[in-house]
View: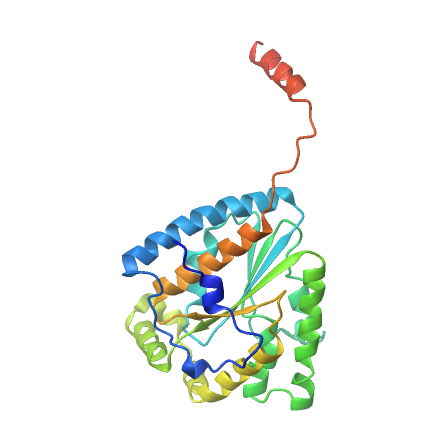
Length: 278
């Protein structure tokens, strides 16, 4: 399939994003869910191979940032796609409300500690962007404080890129109607009751404010070395396919290679045959 998911969903650096104008329920190149799901399974297989090569090579790293409204599917995306990679070389970090210790440091302190070492992949379930999103909309810190953080974030991501970390940032784009349907599912299914949170309904009342905050993030923190992607997510299977394809294509471009062999194969074979003949 030659559909270009990267260029289809990457945020332009030349014009401001209007989330309201972006369709959140698309089919992309697929005829149906079955075709999209099959595509995703093939992409995941390739991701596993690419991640193995990345881990063994030990020279590059990948940071995947996930941001979204409540119920947009960050957990599902991690579980069904990104979490399918080998956990030996891939870590997921869910950033919740900062602890007292975290609040006693600068806002990037807890984030920097979770960035990937060479050979590794880090997945952020929420991220440093919460400090220019929720703190802004919920008025948790003064504007003069959070408004300075955009440039700090840009410098932070530039530092990561400079040392060999590729950065992909995904916004999972759902409609208010789809969100409400998923809230109902959480209410109807006992196994999902643990996700119930009255605060989700308060956040819905600020939907336009959150969209504006995200649009400012895309405008101020969208760089070639750390691009944003807006992923239509009303259809979960399409969300999975698009993210799997973009991560796969990025890792193809990184082209991790197996390290050269620094042992004498002839000698190793001799030792093996000697041990086998014992």
